[in-house]
Image (cartoon, rainbow over all chains, first blue to last red; front, top):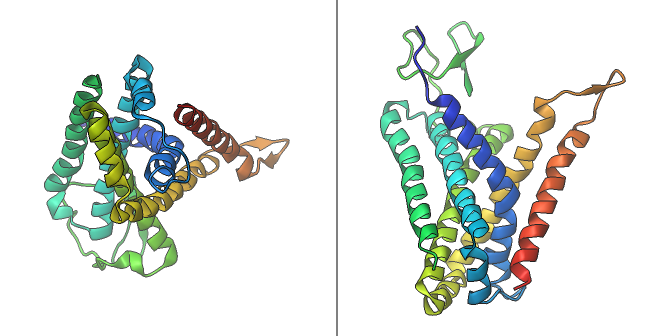
Amino acid sequence: MTKRSNEPLLWLLFSVGGVVAALLIPVHLFLFGLAFPLGWLNAPSYDALLALARGPAGRVYLLVFCILPLFHWAHRFRYTLYDGLQIKHLNELVNTFCYGGAIVGAIVATYLVVHIP
Amino acid sequence: MDQISIDAVGRKEMTTYTEYPPKGYRVRISTYWWLGRWAYLKFILRELSSVLVAWFVIETLLQVNALIGGPGAYQDFQGFLRNPVVIALNIISFFFILFHAITWFNLAPKAMAIRLGGKRVPAILIALPNYAAWLVASVIVAWLVLRG
């Protein structure tokens, strides 16, 4: 008898999250984290950004942008601790921290995105 | 995700992760094994890029929170982003996430060995669509954000 495992689902989330992170985070990080704060480019106004975020497409985009990469982090960081530090005896704690953190992050993201005025 | 372990005789075997370590003699591997060789260090740095991915998601959620807070809260958040510590963290994150993106896109040719006319299609040609998608996605996001 084989034990049913969550591994395929977690790996899928890791993988899809990795694609989202690779495709979208560089441009977001460059614009919002570097170009706007350092004055290389003119930052969009509050109203323009709100208009982008508040539509249905903007909300779905933000959810995908935040939630999937969090599960990517959870899975990858779990195995970084597993392989890198070899703290196998702390498996339960590490798993709770990683996947639990991603679930909390997903709930916070959903709460925030729903509350965009 | 498989792990290569080396048994007493020095044979390499692929084992899947087990919750409890198997019985038997195992060579003790140093906690700092990944410092020994550039390839190993690169592996750990690539894996650690995920931490910066998580950081940028948090930064984005803080920005959404500032949007909800109104123009005043949004201005305050722009001030936070101009903090030199945050800038430094974002510069480090940028390089780590570029490293993630490039290593991620370059995985496709390793997973697919396509042959055309008896010759293996060069890796760059298989990775190319990934880079094209990256460029298109970046241009669309930049256009939407900068047009405002």
